[in-house]
Image (cartoon, rainbow, N blue to C red; front, side, top):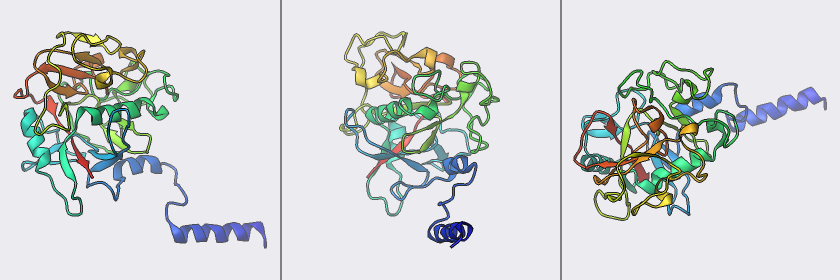
Amino acid sequence: MKTSNLSGLLLLFCMSLSSSCVKKEGSESQDSVTEASKNCPSGFVEVEGNGILGTNDFCVMKFEAKDNSGTPVSKASGIPWGGINATDAQAACESMSEPGFDGSFTLISNPEWMTIARDIEDTASNWSGGVVGSGHIPRGHSDASPADPIEVIDPLDPYSGTGNNSSELAGSGWEQKRTHTLSNGSVIWDIAGNSYEWIDWDPSDTGFSLGPQDEGASWKELSVNPSGSLLIDDYKPVNDSYGTANSFGQWLGGSGGATLRGGTSDKNAEAGVYTLLLVVSSSTTSNHFGFRCVYRP
């Protein structure tokens, strides 16, 4: 049999099995928008658990929560749901349901946030230099241009609404990219920048749980060790040398105890996937304070 005929038969066989056998140019970007998982609810993506952090596999909202008549929804369009306090954010997540998903919907916990952050840190495609540890990772919309949180107008453009693009230098615009890719291929929007996100500190406690309330209230590099009950695995990257110079964020202690993470649209270098804020109370509201839900199977 001629080689050309054999190749044609193999191609027909491949196409009969799955349209994904042949990956078209640019399909990765499209997948980042339309990806779906049989294991996750609509608008959620899969996250692999981390044994060190004590997390099992879970699903997380691909986008920051939007307000759909009082019910959170994960979608590109719409400004993130702000002006909501921590306990109401948790209650909103717990009100979610979807046929076929009998696990629990709830506010993302700090161990789950850290699971995502450390996965991002260890995934080469998130780094401006293309290698883990080389350059910056994205810190999202955080340069105050525009000053407030924004929606995702074009889900195919990871810089949507920022006025920046991938051709800019890292540290001078490149880092405003709003997406990160996990090691399993899941793409997540605005886990850094755009809106601070409320965090339930301890997922094993009933109701919303506060974080440490015994840390000094000043912005610090991630390399600065805690002085109170905050633990290294609560906020630090795996590589302790990564920080503001890599767009990883900073941390701010305080007596409020309610946890916000990720930074917001006007925090500049203080924003990042590891950014931690402990200075506010759980009743505080701001249009810069949003949230994200998880689903635990």
